[in-house]
Length: 226
Image (cartoon, rainbow, N blue to C red; front, side, top):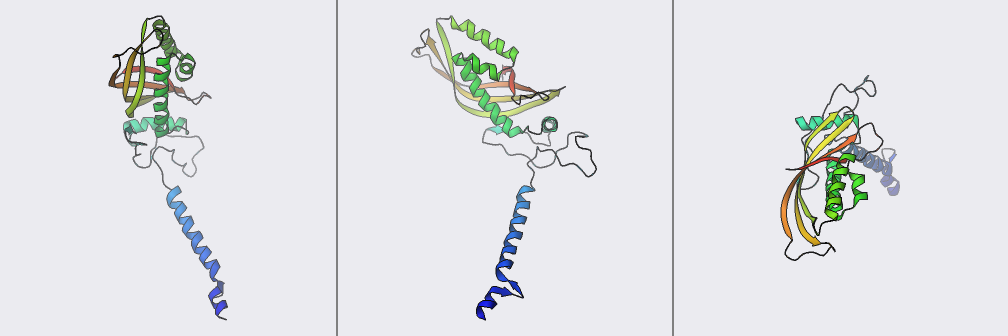
């Protein structure tokens, strides 16, 4: 009798009551996590709204924290955040924090490839016009007796400065501040003693992509010093 009393409660097995309680807790927990928005997602369609219809950029949520220290993500409710949201409306896969992370990786790769004269890598990361400029610079310096080699020691900060859409072409401008070291090497590639220098450099790069194109890659379309 005692065992039966422990195993039932008001005609319901105690184990089922416990499992039901756990299930309710998990459902509430999932709702509290999955129901949160991070700021740059497209808002859900209102009842009766036609699929694909966007009356204009609408932003819900809160300020996105920077992905890592030194990275600046615009407030979704700011003017720049609204312009980024226009890109999100055209390309739901576009995510500003993720874009900035990829832009930083591209910045490192482009600087390294240009310094090494790696044309194959540059072709995958630059627009055709910018590639022609980089390739001409590589060809010019290849015949010089001495050359400068650049290495990125660290990226001190990276932030989205602006964003625009012109037709189907989207452009995002990023400001990088990096610690770079430059060393002169001779024709054989040997470092010249005493030629190494280090400085903090500010670069403002523009990345662009055709929103109707199948290629999801953003490529460098302009670069200047900040």
